[in-house]
Each structure stands twice: as C-alpha cells, then as structure tokens.
Amino acid sequence: MVFIIVPFMEFLLPAFLKFFPEMLPSTFESESKKEEKQKKKMAAKLELAKFLQETITEMARRNRAKLGDASVQFSSYVKQVQTGHKPSTKEIVRFSKLFEDQLTLEHLDRPQLVALCKLLELQSFGTNNLLRFQLLMKLKSIKADDEVIAREGVSALSVSELQAACRARGMRSLGLTEEQLRQQLTEI
Image (cartoon, rainbow, N blue to C red; front, side, top):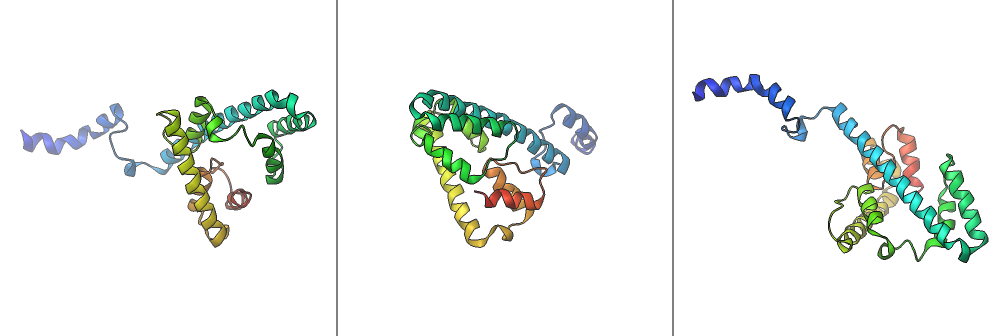
C-alpha cells in the first residue's frame, strides 16, 4: 500500500492546496502573493491611521476651550491634511506640543493601543499594560534603528531595506520610487 500511495500523493497535492491554501510554508509563496499580502496590510494600516487621525481630532475638540486660538489653527491644519496637504515635520512638531500630556502611552485607551499595535505590526492581544510595553519596546528599537540610519545615511540602504524601514515605522512602502522612500525616511 505504501509503495502505491506515497508516489501518487504528489498528484493529489493541487487538490490539497485548493482546499488548504496555507498548507505550504511561506517560502513557496510567489512574489505576486507577497505583494498582495503587503497591499492588504497597507490598506489595513491606512484604516488604522484614519482611526488615529479621528482620535486626535476628537482630542483637539475636547481641548479647544482650553487652548483658544491654537485649537482653531490646529482644526484648520487637520482639515488641510485630510484634503491631501502633505504635512511637514516642522508643522507636526509645532502642533504636537498641544498634545504633550494627552498622547503619552499611559493616557491612551484600549482601542487606540490596539490600533497602534496593528499599525506597527505587533500582536494586539493582552492587557493594556502589555500593549503599552510592546509599543514602548518597538519605539525604542525604531529609535535605535533611526540612530544607525542617521549615522550611516539613508543613501546606504537598499530598496528592500528602505521598504522594511518605512513599513516598520507605519509609513507607506509599496508603490513608491526609491527616491520617495528615501525622502520619507529623511523626514523623520
């Protein structure tokens, strides 16, 4: 039986793959499937980024009474960004000072922590403290990586390294030219 069944099992392999597509390890994945998975992840990240934008906008509305004129400027800035204006690093730093106390990891709610974990490709289950710890460790590793990149220069990175660095930071990594990827990393 064994001498008959084992050699003919390879003919049944396409049928098994049809019913169980995740049966083979990822090393047997084609490039198109890898790109498709990355596109799905990017779409999910964009949805999470929208959620985080809405959270920041909501926090700005809550603080509007306390901040006065700065909150009006921030609201108009958020509307510009939502209509397609690309924010500069200086603008982000200027408005981030308005949220110094509220945007620390200790003050974020569970949905916000889960969204950040998914954005940074971390596991999003566990207690709030575990999620905060994971985020803190990921941010520390990204900061160390940023220091290495700053020391060596963005020009020393290959295209795949540029894409991985952008993806690790929650930035867009697919569909961009090498120059656009380098520009994204130099803005951080």
